[in-house]
Amino acid sequence: MLDYAALSALSAVVREGSFERAAQALFVTPSAVSQRIRSLEERVGCALVVRGQPCRPTDTGRRLCQHVNRVRLLEQELQGALPALAPEGLTRVALPIAVNADSLATWFAPAVAAFAAAAPVLVELSVDDQDHTATWLRSGAVLAAVTGTARPPAGFNSRPLGAMRYLAAASPAYLARHFADGVGAGSLARAPSLVFNAKDDLQARWVRRLCHRDVELPRHAVPSAHAFVTAALAGMGWGLHPEVLIAPHLAKGSLIELVPDTALDVPLYWQHARAASSLIDGLSREVVAAAARALRPL
Image (cartoon, rainbow, N blue to C red; front, side):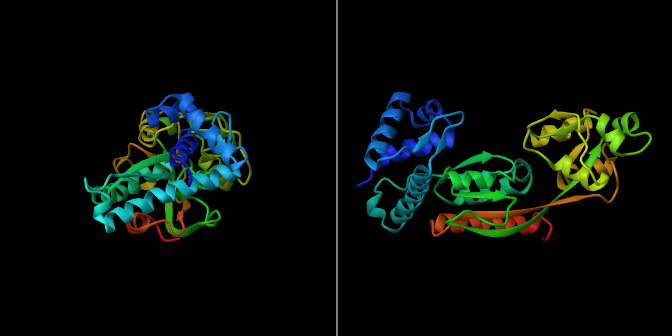
């Protein structure tokens, strides 16, 4: 039999990125987490975690993480079908999901909230760039993700969701100060832009398409979808914003597109563990339906 306490420790280390944070999540000491993983490594005969900042699973560690996450869901499903197994009622099971910040700030949160209100789950959301959330799937840290890539990792299914439309916009005062003579490679190389974090390349992609070449952009990092809009309104910089978030500001004139008719559409996909459980199926239905209402067709 597998040691599920040790498997839970392994899953927590991969999800949290460190032994210390995993210990906090499991309400044990870091040494207890280390001992559990060491015991599991001795049993399977190989390393399961690459110690670092953050900690990463080995290939075997990734497979074990995927296994324990799926087992939790299957046990929950079995308890629902056989109430005698859970005389005190169903306990909520952790459901780890990765999603990009702009989806979470717009259409995804209502979808996952509707699902969580009806299902016995505790949702664990990890936020990353849409081009990097698939890495969370491959690592075994999550069971499902909104991604920007169509091809899923091995063992996962992929479904197209639609395209999120982004508009390059800034405040009127910012435009007057930095782009009085027009928007081009020269002015863009001098005007501060906004990025979510170091992984955010939307601004660079938009500039490359506009100018037909790469331009080195000065950047302010603002790692919050709503604060990103607030920073643009305050004249801190220009950036690519989800159309749905800034539509009211465009209508009022508090934000203006840098160049009209230059929207950038980013395709999104829903990827989830294959044959995981009916809980994943239910979540998938909510996510796909919400995306159909909020996103543009691919």
